[in-house]
Image (tube, rainbow, N blue to C red; front, top):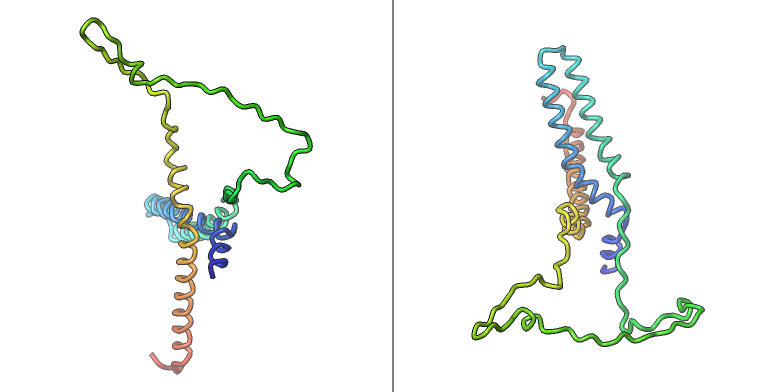
Length: 186
C-alpha cells in the first residue's frame, strides 16, 4: 500500500492533473466574468447572439482545462536522498583521471562583537556594522505558494476522483430509477 501511495504521489500525470484542477478554478472564474460582461453588453441584442456567447463560454470551460493539462510543466526531479555513507560511490561513477585533494588553510574569523567596540578614554563606544551573513533572498510569492501547494496536489486529485466517482454513481442510480417508472407516469 505504501508503494502505491509513493507511486501515486510521484506520478507525472497526477502532478499535471493536480495543477490542472487548480488552474481550472481561476480559468473557470475568468470565463464566467467574461460571460457576465458579454451578457451585460449584449442584453439588448437578439437571443441568438446571447445563446452564441453562452455556447462559446461552455466550449471554453471544456477547452481551457485540457490546454492547461498540456501546458503544465513536468515535475522537477526530486533531490536524491543521501545514502548512509555519502562518500562511497559506485565504481562506474568514479572519474577516470585521479583527483588531487588540497586542504584549505584555516582562517581565523575575528570576534564581531570585539570589532564593533573601541575605547576612547573612559568611554567605550560600540558601533553597529552590517552582518556578514546575509539572510537568503526572499522567494517570490508564486514560487513560495507553488512549493507549499505541491505536496497537497495528489490528495486534491484523489478527492476530485472520489467526488467524480460518487456523483457518477448517484447519476446512474437516478437513471435506473427513471427507467423503472412507467411511460405514462407523471
